[in-house]
Length: 570
Image 1 (cartoon, rainbow, N blue to C red):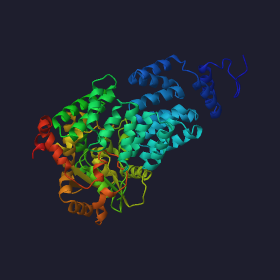
Image 2 (image 1 turned 120 degrees about the vertical axis):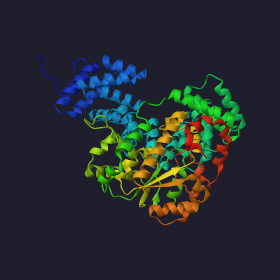
Image 3 (image 1 turned 60 degrees about the horizontal axis):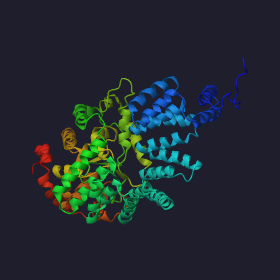
Image 4 (image 1 turned 180 degrees about the horizontal axis):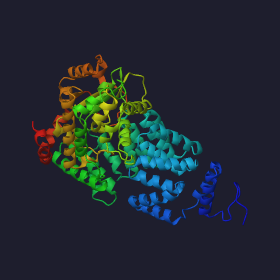
């Protein structure tokens, strides 16, 4: 029998990756994490030779993520410390939006092999996508220490800075990248996206024009330009977009962006019939290219919430949760006027405007974790939470938000539009938080959503039936809480805000227990970044421009009006 191999010796076949993998496992079992990490690095530096992992890698390339997940789960059950398999699992989970699963797998991979840069990069991506911006910044800092000029690491860091509210820091990174890589359309597109939340519309437009000069059929640049402001696209641009759509150059993703841009340009010229036809094509193609992920519908979630949050249930939990009075939740469907209200309230010297915060959604994911054995799905899982757990959940929310705040004002806004699904959770874990319901005329609101291309998270808006189902669900859930907790939710109608801004703002501030501040009426002068599609509108004084749009589209939305039924009645 040969002598046992010790740390520092070389396997007989040092070029065989699986030999290094076996050596790493032995060193890890002996507690030699440093030696194991070096052996793992040798294993990872070679192409995959394990037949199962090669098959999984091919499945991921084919976007067959279901097969990849199944095979990886089996492989890791027998070899839980294989960093190559953990990385592949993280890669697949990021691709299908399972960011929590991705983070767990990738974090384990970099714990085993700290120098595994590819896994650490994808870990930073997963953290960014799930809203853990501080963790994403930590991981990108680690990566940049080794490669300070890596373009992808810097772009990822810029995205995390935006999440933290440091848009200036992100713009600085993107400006330097755009200058260093003038031929990179993707970098220039990023630069335009970072400029848009600031009062730099002309610079953003120039960046998007720069992208189009490099890649004429780049649909996202055309849409962003069209969505930037009224009149951003010229007559010649319409001719160009139509020619591009008639060519074979655009990808499927480019095509739906181009149709959204064409629709907006036609709308700007008052050609509402042609614009609506283009919006219908754009929405249809968007849904075909990126279909809705099957899951629990808004209507089903509302049914569950109404069944759980009875007067008796809420009474039993009276006084639970964190007592903080800092949060102010602005609820509302997208395009309901919530960004306008956010801009008005953030001008108050006692209220900090943040952005669409992910914290409540992160808490919901923990409460709806399929790996919690024997636990019912959310929101029924809240029935098992005692006072201490509810208080801890409220504290966790506040702690997560604290990392993103930039001032010491006593109150802050959370305008994440999907929070409306979690009104009951808010009342349990943050009983003293204020809740505002922003409402717009249902037909106008739904039409506005259908006219907007959302980057992610609002795929229900791309079909009339799912759009109306979501709106009806929202209306039904708010009505339920109005009945079981009268006066708990303050409603602000966009029409009232337009008709008598000062009186509406005074009434709202009184409900919030705050003094009137004249700065709220000068909200359009604020320099705070605005990240939603309403960025340009809320930088102008209140106006009635939307009324003319609704009137113009009225002859072309009979299906939407019929689906809304009584809600669309004058």
